[in-house]
Length: 131
Image 1 (spheres, rainbow, N blue to C red):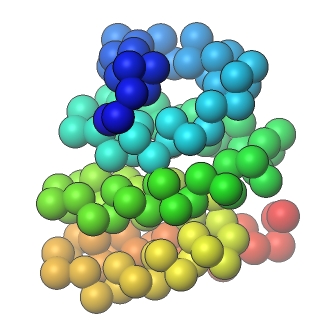
Image 2: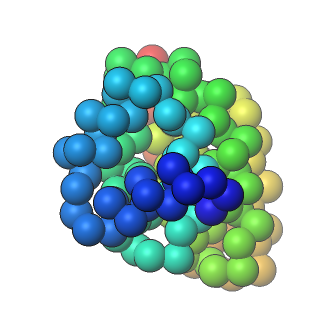
């Protein structure tokens, strides 16, 4: 996690201040944090990143789509759970760029990540008509 602000947000997320973080990101539009949050080793932070995206996506989808490459960096993690969580987050955001990153994980060395990629592609297909 590169900057102090990102570290602070992750620490607050870990402490359970999700509503405060949602309000902060809504105000500051600091969606770039999604990439570092989803790559965090702490499960509560990753769960919070997904909850953040779910809460803010309808109002800020276009802005959040710009963060797909940052989120996709988590797909290079050595931790297969982080890779799977990043796939889920990418499926929430949608778009062709996210779909391409997800497809790239269909051949992941870890079976759980391959399964997560398959599920993410199914989710994208199901939500395609919602946008």
